[in-house]
Structures are given as structure tokens and as C-alpha cells.
Image 1: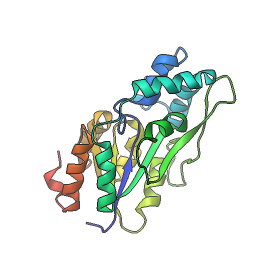
Image 2: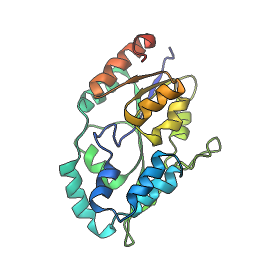
Image 3: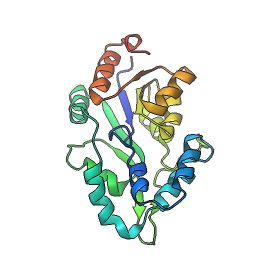
Image 4: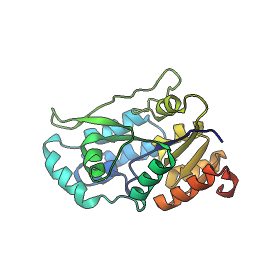
Length: 226
């Protein structure tokens, strides 16, 4: 086991119980967003193209209404505060890496004592519809057109010999999961880990994540493999 344990943790559908972008477009999105989502899940279009299209289906003029809706509709996955404490106490290098957008991520994380790097996209409300500013494009090793390139963040944070764990649930986590030493997964990502034979364990809450990380820290990954 490497001395450094680096975590790449998704936000939408991982820290939150539901994907917030999908929650927003269900309520406020323009017609046609379901087809775009279907094409994302089938990996027929790139994440940057698909997620950008979903965000651009949202009306910029309803920013305050959407913010209020998300505060009511979003739920943080059980065990998340304890997970943050665990990472600090154990000296784990947590990175929250999301293909979501700042205007809903910042308010939802505001109640928590976040002291780790957060990588996400930014919303541009200057037009009729929200546009996306992509601050972390793919590096020279990635041609997936990720939008927020999780593989490039993983490569940067791995550095010299770190053991990298990806925690996630969906298509935006898959490319990074393929590069990780271990994956803690649910939903679509869990199915793909099984299909591709990636070393992984399932989770439903962050209490599960803590239990898996405990075993990894003890060098007993085999005890949590599915």
C-alpha cells in the first residue's frame, strides 16, 4: 500500500442522492433534454457535448428560482459529514471532482467544513440560457472530450506512487475509474466495474465508503471486493 491515499470523489449522485443537473432539467429544462440524457448514458456523445446541452436547456433568468428549488429538493447522502471528518483524521487526500456547475454545488456544500480541492465547471448567466465555462479541459493523455476532465485530475493528484480511489456513480466517473487502483461505486458505475473487471466495492451511504477505506488502509482490499 502506498503511503498516500488519494480520493477522487464525484458530487452529483454521489455526495448528493440524486443527480442535481437531472433534477434541474426535469423541472426547468427545455424540450428534448431526455434524448440528450439517453445519448449520454449510451455514450453516443461526449460528456462535454451532452452535459453542456443539458445545462444550456436551463433558463438563465430563473437562477434564484432554481437555487431555491435545489435547496428544497436536494439531499446529501447519509454519512457525508462523517466522511469529511474521517478523511481529515486519517490524512487522506480528498478531491471533489464534478462535471456539475458552481451555482448549485457551492450552496449545497456551504454548510460543510470543506477543506479539500473542489474541481467543477462554472455557469455563465449572461445570456437567455445558462452556458458552461469549462476550466479543466482534457490533457494530452485524454481524448474523451470530458468537459471537466477527471482523468487529468487523477493523474495530477496521483503524483509519485499514490494509491488512488475513485468514488462515483455514473458515466462521468468511468474514465477515471479505469485508471484508479480501486473504485467505490453505485448505479451505472457499479455495473461497469463488474462488466470491466475493475477492482471495486459497492456503496449506498458514506458510512459504507468509510468502511471500505478502513479495509484499504489496512491493506485488506480483498476483503471488500465484490
